[in-house]
Amino acid sequence: MIRYAIVGCGSMGREHIENLHALWGASGNGRIVAVADTDAGSRAQAAAMLEPGTPVLADHRELLDRGGFDAVVIATPNHTHAAVLADVLTTDAHVLVEKPLVTRVEDGLALLKQAQSRKGIVWVALEYRYMPPVAELIRMTHGGAVGRVHQVAIREHREPFYQKVGHWNRFSANTGGTLVEKCCHYFNLMEHILGEPAVRVFASGGQRVNHLDEVYDGRRSDILDSAYAVIEHASGARAMLDLCMFAEGSIDKEHIVVVGDEGKLESLLPACTLRYGRREDWGRRDGWNDTSGTGRGVDVRRIWDRTIRYQGAHFGASYIEHAKFAQAISAGSPSEITLAEGLRAVAVGVAAHRSIETGMPVALADVLPALT
Image (cartoon, rainbow, N blue to C red):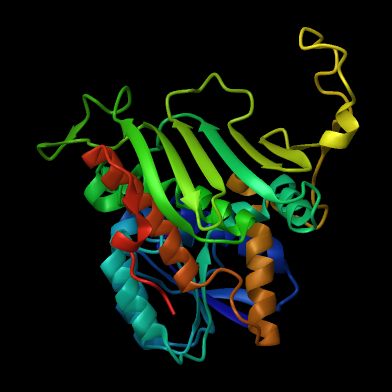
């Protein structure tokens, strides 16, 4: 049996509770033994989801002192991840820490050093790769379905950021900036799909529509709501991010495109659709003015994983991630998404924000030293 402790019971912390309930059900092979959160309202909402008598604490350090857990899930606000994880790393517990790993690269480097030689695994919750159509896109890409990959494009057109406790996500100092907070998922996906690190970033973006008139405790919201970013990778392959957070009129909010020298793959969410076409299947055109072949030979199908018992807010990705995390704990296997990988995703976001501020491309080596 895996005994879980959860630190942070806001919306994402409660999402983890739902996923763990769905994963373990009444099997008795996993249960939540304690939770902690500094906010009384969040504690009350979490308590209503737990077995009567489960300790619900105000301080994560009291939770750690009590012990009696095998794994800790960290789902506190971004700017607290470094301090909370540093405390958890003093135990032997396995850890699942929410994205972004940190808001500052130097904090991530300190955590990497602290985590060396630990018994418990540390898994960074960059779960987008487990969304069923995305997972299939990755599997096919790595299996050679499109040949050598040259371009990866990710578009997210969605609604504004949701309300969080104390409005913490309205300020870049707390989130790390939108391209860290929201888009570390995508930068991680780009590196994972391409199988190689980013080396340079050029970005343009700003706060154009959302939260312009929001003021909290005398501070005006400064959170970026739209951006473009081009990321160059080690082999010369390129990736692109198109983010707009005032685009509620979108049908498919997330669109991932992978193009190789032999074909193209596309994943669309929430449609859970995968499109796949090969250049050789497109057919010849008689002339440049003949467009009748558009879409010829493209396979379109809906992708879903029937093992998912709880879809939640991430198309079942968090459920799959928890299943894989539990399996790694039980089997003594390493983490699939390591601290180093989580830190690289943050570093690309930091480089993108620096590029926006300076108007110049930013080398990853200037943001993050080489990781061994």
